[in-house]
Amino acid sequence: GFSLSPKTAFEKLCLTRFVNCVVVLAFTVKVVHINLKDVLKQLSEPPYVSYVPMVRTVTSRGKSHLQFDGTALIQGQHMVGELNSQETQGLVWLLGKERGGSIEVKDPNSGDTYVLEAGKESMKTHVTMRGSELYVDTTIRIPGTIAQSEHANPMDPKQLAAMETLFTREVYSTTNHTLASLQSRKVDALGIGLRVYRRDPKTWHRIEKHWGEIFSKGHFTLHITVQARHPGLIRTIYPHVG
Image (tube, rainbow, N blue to C red; front, side):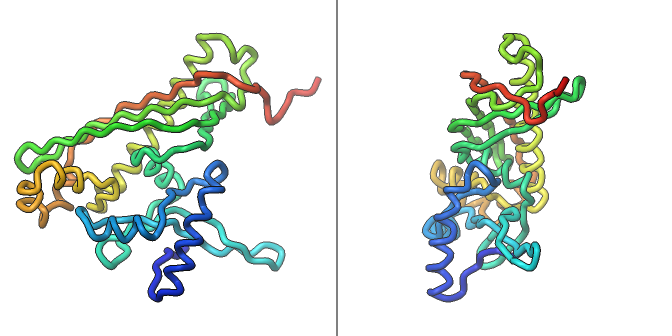
């Protein structure tokens, strides 16, 4: 894979057009949407970190095409790490940027597969500094429609609640994995440092040089809720014949 890191004015123009077109693929691929203007803005303000989609060339039957392949993490003028597709989906949720996608889970007991067509996410984050210790409390709510269920009676309230629990666990697991990845790299791609700066510039200037370390040791609490509010068309991808 390679990151979209422009070095010339022409490349910057191409990057802007390319990243903007990603929005039409929101439902089928895990991509965190951002345009060049926002990238440059993020790199010019605390915590001086941004992210861009990564692509790789795939050759099939003699033909090559581009495929989205995770997210590049940029700090200052350098790429300092990357997130895979799963971690990128976690980043989308942690940033509150989910606008419509799908969440697929498998029931560990029955082996049934369930798919949720996710709606627009709502996300709230509360940041507190206690001395040099960081505390972050994030609430994520994702509504959606059941797009696939292999259960005999998916409209049963108890079954619907069970599916919601599985979806919630999936989102919680993915966001926690992404958060752990960012903290291990000491890269604040969530913009927590900017929240600290806006709330208390004096505190930020005191801790700025050590922000990577503070972020990596931050205490994060996630509250995840996935709600299937309006069950839609229930279907099975692999129907039983007999």
